[in-house]
Image 1 (spheres, helix red, strand yellow):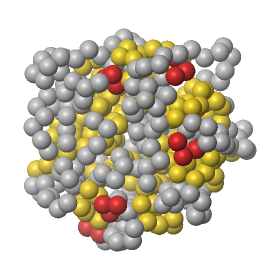
Image 2 (cartoon, one colour; image 1 turned 90 degrees about the vertical axis):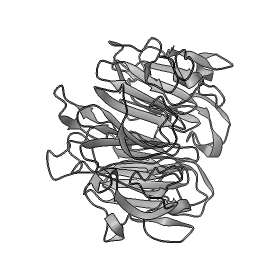
Image 3 (spheres, one colour; image 1 turned 120 degrees about the vertical axis):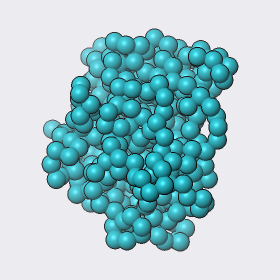
Image 4 (cartoon, helix red, strand yellow; image 1 turned 135 degrees about the vertical axis):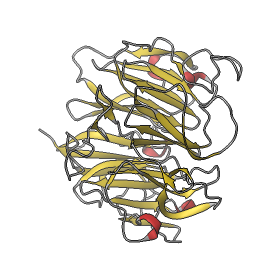
Length: 412
């Protein structure tokens, strides 16, 4: 899934949301540098989730979608997909498991993008400034007033409103207590049955199967602050492990054990427990990390375009480093001098890593299941390869474990 980066100013004011979307600065939801563009999709299309509108089961290269030409953010849930438009509307299409499409329908799937229903199932959802999804778990969206709405599965109370319903087919507001909406959110990120919200003051609030509070106490039914997280600028979640990028460039991890934590960890109740936020090895203050992403392997991008990788190598995402197994320490992926600068990285819940470059091309590597590398073939192992869309510049990518979506603008 494409992370929407909420960029906060020094005083905690919101400078940008969604790669660079100014929050509350103007009535348009595509200001502050986030360009509306044409969407492309590729990979598995069993449920029409690429947005191409056709019945093909798979696309091995980018295909133009049937979406309007004013898309500012895309999210892939694997089998269901979402597009936020420049006017603040949200469209959904694909597989409707657990009412993930949020359109009130009981149909199994659709290839036709349609508006997500409004709060309470009335009208259409508007004023959307960010959306997040992880598979067919709950879907969450931030609205322009700083509130958050959610719909879909509620297995671990990830709807965040205290409801005991197993599924909801339309959005309702996330609450901090009965009758009290969560306010002040600027960004949301979803993992396995959990959602994290980045707040305007740089703190983090979470609900559902929260595993970064040190307790493993079970489902958190209302939005609750996560201790130990302040001055946060970005969140990335895939499965259980979550990464948090702080304003000083440090990256913290928590949520589960394993190499994706990128640090040593101790028992549950220790200061280095995998279930409390602790700094990733070698990514402390001053590391200049400006972007993070995570699947079974994690990725960090620095301001000067360097990429660091760590985690598991079960999907070949560390193979370019020449290691057969996993890595517990972030390791630089050295690229030849003179290549275009990498400006964005994405591999959230995806077997392929995507590195968007300053020239509008994309560097891809990893496990090419369902043709997700976009290289035109179904060759499984892909070492770093350049992918382009003729006549277009790729400005953002949203990936999951089935398909990939990208926003493009005219090539310069």
